Length: 89
Image (cartoon, rainbow, N blue to C red):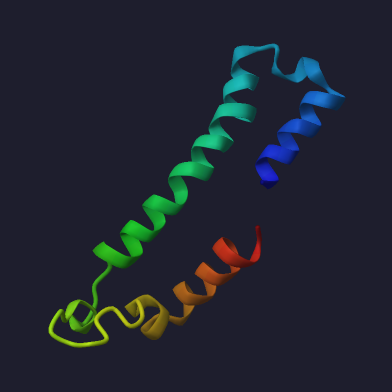
């Protein structure tokens, strides 16, 4: 939402900013592409690729996947996830 509101502000108050092709790609298409792809890439790497102790994927347990291991064992990633992905928007 923040990206869209900033782009709307740019279109209303300075409509000539998107006249050149470079500005159009850098200021219009790149932020939209980053906003769409960043969450998928971030959570794919953190949840599926990051090393874990193996208890997260115990499918015989009733509480399989109770919490992602980065939330439990890595305080920096847990704080970054909350601050950057949930708190800032």
